[in-house]
Length: 129
Image 1 (cartoon, helix red, strand yellow):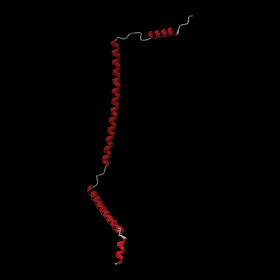
Image 2 (cartoon, one colour):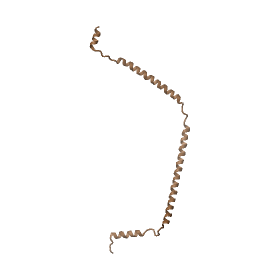
Image 3 (cartoon, helix red, strand yellow):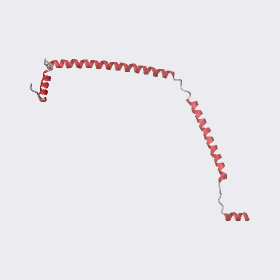
Image 4 (cartoon, helix red, strand yellow):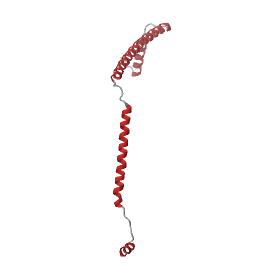
């Protein structure tokens, strides 16, 4: 037996692979029918999945709307805002009065801190008189 080179073995295996395949050839009409059937099946599956997702989203939206409605119905009526405004204004006026009083007290306390520089000679003359 003669040994075959690796190139000839590859050629033989390639030729045998080519021979293996579809025995009958398909016409263009057959291929189009198969593709059309596959596309219709895929569209049907995608449509059903989309419908399921949309239904899930609708159910979730309804659930959220119910929760919002429940929260809105539980909210107590708003308090009288004018009363709160009057109280805030009164506190602001009182705060302003305290700030003015504190400023006056500080200024009164500083009056003793004023230093008048008098020349020593003038002071001596004033004392002599």
